[in-house]
Amino acid sequence: MTSFTRTFPDGFLFGTATASYQIEGAVAEDGRRPSIWDTFSHTPGKVANGDTGDVACDHYHRMPADVAIMTDLGVDAYRFSVAWPRIVPAGEGAPNPAGLAFYDRLVDELLGAGIRPVVTLYHWDLPQALDDRGGWLNRDVAQWFTEYTRTVVGALGDRVSNWTTLNEPWCSSVLSYAIGDHAPGHHDTLESMVAAHHLMLAHGAAVPVIREECPGAEVSVTLNPTQVWGPADGDDLDADAVRRADNALNGLFFGPIFHGAYPDGFLDDTAHLTDHAYIHDGDLRTISAPLDNLGVNNYFPTRVRAARDGEDGRNPMPGCDGVVADPPHPPLTAMGWEQSPESHRLIIERSARESGLPLYITENGSAWDDTVDADGQVHDAERVTYLQEHLAAVADAIEGGTDVRGYFAWSLLDNFEWAYGYDKRFGIVHVDYDSQVRTVKDSGLEFARIIAAHHDR
Image (cartoon, rainbow, N blue to C red):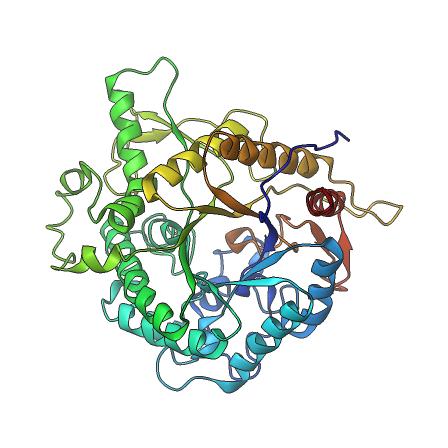
């Protein structure tokens, strides 16, 4: 195994990350009610093998032991999400004391271990009760979210200072409402635009609430931008395909959140769908509330080109009719995702330019077909290489002048990988889903070695 020798600035945070529905289980315990992912995963044909998050990693019951694993790894911080339907089971109204108590215990457990809690308020598990009222298509969701935010930050803000409003709103809008691969599984391009706008509106409305409830908070949003590549020998049509894909994948959120406007050409490219009446006066001012840092989740680049004569160019992404996907370049992960440390560096650098903020890499990782070998270990050499190469790309960005302040490996545990169910493993810790036994993989041992070397220098 190649030794990793790159260094990072003093104060750089090494952490790991999870999401509530992917690990917690206990979906009907202590007052929790269904989320859209409970509904979606229990709908035949939506998730591989009919898998659900009903048990997942049973983290709800095994939390202290999982924190102990993080302590052994030596991580500085842990990024986790709060389950809205565990805190406010009806979506709005009275909070659930038992739900709050779980996260209260988790925060105390982390702090007792010297691990900084980094809390994401929304990682896709919208209460089903709110989806029944329109969910992210209902403008009232911004108020519902701010009330939920006030409850959570009011309960934990005396000990938690790092707050993230939303995780990957592109997935909660375009992937969920246009492409249909995630809950609630709709196939309507206009709905995805409305959902994206309401997600950003909820984010912007929640920012001052976090600051009010937690003076001195560091407030963030986590986006999943991607480097968009066109063909090396592309023409003007391909360049326009790249522009439109980049607007739908990146500018849709970069523009309103950091520039107070939708990206150039986006409203014109989607004018055949809508008059954009869902954008109200003052919305963009609310959406562009000042932040303290930006979370970047990145795994792979995106390759596109223009559709040619006779080729089906239908594309559900907003403004992307006539844009078709080009195959990823090898080497690929078990997800079929292209491994490109260069693209990782480029999108980090762009995210810093767009936002003007310090960055945290809040998710980065890779899925492989891991097995526990006869020696009782998990020898995931491919993930070790991916980790080293992408950490090197972060170091390159920092040395080039980009202010990156931390890196969170995705994920702490193998877990429920959304529509892929339990088929795909991203963890640096292996989980036997039958016995719930955890085994630190070689990648986890390498991550621990890198962290220890950073602390010891």
